[in-house]
Figure 1 (cartoon, rainbow, N blue to C red):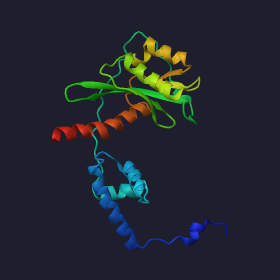
Figure 2: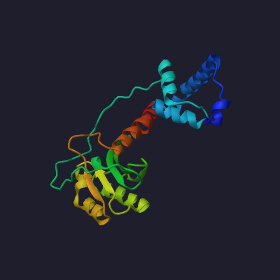
Figure 3: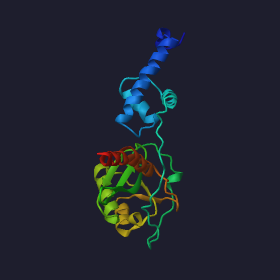
Figure 4: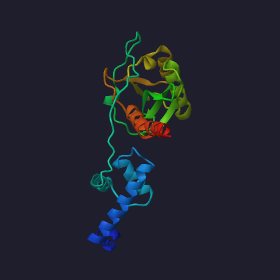
Length: 225
């Protein structure tokens, strides 16, 4: 009959069995925020699957909505980009590219992390295909030294081929002569975002997730102690 063997053996759940399974999932969903207080329904789905629950994100969304477990995040933006500088800027060629593998496009970004009495700055290089961080640096100053350290770490770890696109904002840390020289030395194609858009690449999305799910949560925990 040209159908999968699993189709023959499939037994649909009864209403009672499905309700019991929903209850088990909901009970676990009520426990997980103690460990992951900022997880949304997609990350909750991934965590449940890791724990052996066979569930998709639509079901998790429905159960979290029914139990009022969806987190509400306040969105705010603090600028770390200074585009008022004498250095050259480059056109955005990333938007014209279809990515099919790793080390074809790297995206870069900077954010600040508020410590108890001071700030540090985090620069990352993210592979746009795998969404993995391939290089990072965490000093106390926001200048080209910060971004160059992250870039050198990424190059050392991945050693990309000539022609890899490096995509960033137009900030002075990415347009500085020292940074551009490293890019040209290793054969990168340079691409920069349009002006005035603070949420324009995958690295910025990663930064937002990192701060909401890790930095802010840990800061609140320290204050509560």
